[in-house]
Structures are given as structure tokens and as C-alpha cells.
Length: 267
Image (cartoon, rainbow, N blue to C red):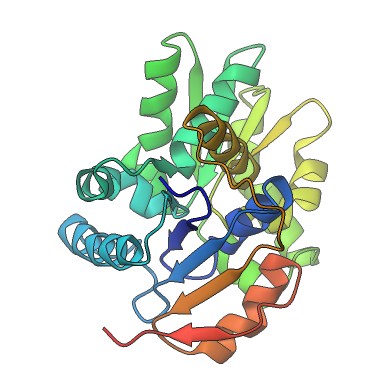
């Protein structure tokens, strides 16, 4: 496989850019093609069959871009449609945020008491808890849906009194269980890390699934000997299905840098 081929990263919308940001920091020479299905977001309220269909379309698009790795940067898609991606990808390695987050949570939990926060769809899928129990049947997993976090993050209210009060309410039940780890089970949540760390307290370790996915990607590229050996500046491409201007405005907050040109794909 040509090691200069790009990594394909995809999400239902904007949130997966936190994964792209972590990849840029961890793997600065890797080319990336990011796909955000902004015309059909949110996925969380759609049926499993619809999510699988949309996910298959996106996978096929990225495979046509000659990617060497696929990363599912959407917890909802990872929870219900990861197998669809793996079947279509064939020999192309497929990583996802749930696998990366679950591994990091179990591997670093001393007491084996882990909290997972995410969207209602991700929490109801039980995907994190199921994977963690496969890795270590002894761990205790406490899940909490936090539906208000996504709109608060997209509004830019990262350190707003309303967001702080919301976090205190959401985290109260899981903190009462004396957890030692808190998994950020949504790609929007890394932007709330400082606030969540403050609310959770110093005794709770935050597991950022964007950072853990970048680490897993780096390990996989090395293991398969497909890491880019060129030291030329990496090229980044962003493809969306609707409203590139809004994607650019909010996306630059997620990415922490300019996006440059954003392409709009017509299905």
C-alpha cells in the first residue's frame, strides 16, 4: 500500500473535527480527507437501517478517494454501523471512537469504576459498556446521556454558567458512584474538557476519545507499516453535504485553526 495515501475520517456533522485535530497533532505528516454529512445530521434520531444506509454511502465515497485507513469519528455511527464499514472496507483498516475510548478507559482505570457520557443514542446502544466488559468483565460502567451538551458546544458556550449548571446536573448521578474515569463519549465533548474536569474533580481521569483514537491510529499505522514517510506538509481536505459556510464558522472552533476550502458534495 502507498503510505502517502490519505486517512479518511467521517462523522454525521461537525463533531468529528475534534478527532481530526487530535490526528493533526499526533500525526502531522498524514494527509486527511474529512467527510461531514451536514445535510442529514443529526443521526441520533434516525433508525438503525437509515444510519447503516448513510454510513455505507459515506464509506464508499471515501474508498473512492483511495484512503489507506478509515476512522469512524461519530459515536452514533460507531455504535450501530461499524460492521457495515468493515465489510465494505475489505483490507483497509477501520478504527472507531468507541473502540479507542473503551480500550483507554479500561486500560487506565485503577478501581474499575468508569462513567460514560454521550448522546441518548450512544448511551442507549450500550456500545461502550459492552466493549468494556469484553475487555474486562470486572469493570463497572455507569452511563449518562447528556443531550444538551451538543447544542451548547455548537453555540460556543464552553465556559458559560448555563453549561456549568447543566454539567453539574448530568454528572451528579455518575459521580455519586465514585467513578475514577469519565469517558467523553461524543466528539463534541472534548471542547468542554476544562469545565468537565473542574466539575468532576481531580480524582476523576477524563478519557478523550478523540485523543485516544489518534493514538490508536498512530499505533495501527506503525504496526501495518503504512505511516507516511514523507516529511512534506500534510494536505487536508474537507467535504460536507450542506451549508459549507456554517461548517466553516463552527468547524474552525472545533479544529482550532483555519479550514481553508470546504467542498460541498451533491449526492
